[in-house]
Length: 441
Image (cartoon, rainbow, N blue to C red; front, top):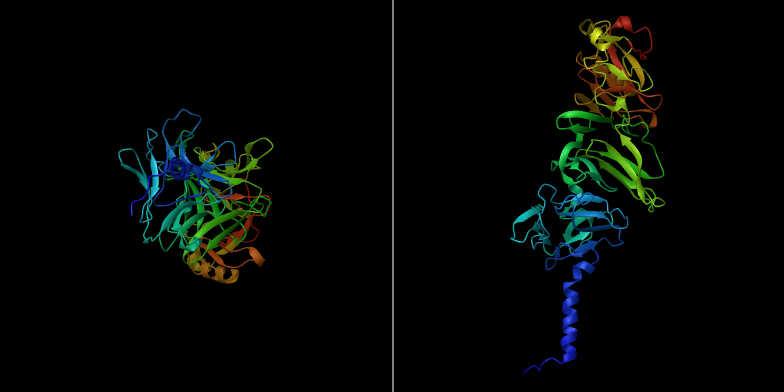
């Protein structure tokens, strides 16, 4: 039976339905399927409107390069939090973003040259890409909302921004690193000079590095906070935790108040800053910055030196230690550090330990840790090994527990007015008459 020709009204309705189908992405909520794509000028928006994904040019307009990224939607500055093709910009508005039937995200230009793509090890059945209200872009099965089953997520590949719900650290099973890398500049999101990363050599700790040069070190997690962050305490803006097990090490934070907007950024000057959004002035305000002061500069005072921001000069040798090269030290070159006033005599069994309080624990790169040992057991283990230079509790919560041992010269120490940690440093028996303290010389 032949189908009759469309009436003018049917043709008009067909036109409008076709037009609505074409406009699905620009009006779309938060998801694209394998039959949809995003062109430059189209966006998708997270379910409650907090984040938007699309194409942008960075900076104040001086750059004409185009990038696929995610930015805050409700905030007038349009602050970018993630960039896909940060290494390879588009030079025009020909970019097309889509999800393949295999569940792979692809960004290509007008000649179908792939500019950026995601990776995935699992087979997808009905993949979709969804921008979550957290700012996380995920690839998942259309009918499966479980985060455990995400096929891919942008939170696994952070750029310079640390959002609530993200992890910073390392997955030991997959060798996945969750690091931050700065932009080159405000106009160029390509990876810059600085990296914020988790060092899992010895007891885990975070570092800011400029290439291979250390800039800042957080100190180890002590069950309450990082040893170098005594100001990291319960607050009204965000909550935080450090997960430490056989599978992964990571730091994570979440907002304590849903009305607060907060993010942390590793900027192109190497500063790790947390910001909160101030609605009254319509601007970001700095909540904290590290390095916070001169004493946060990595290894400023050399080995067995301690930095005290309240002193002038800020560097001094630990008590019972003296400058290795006094003339150089007196010229404010502290890089050579300090040495023991009395040399150790471990092999005769006469060494002991002095307690130093309120310190940022030394670099743990060459360390050993055991979470089940007591402090007495820790001392006994260190005493039996002449290479062991110091010991401390690895966890200071609930009275203290666990063991942390150092097997190299102690470096990057600072003293705090309060809320620092205790450490016990190996000393010659003749130096054990007094409680450890700090001195300038």
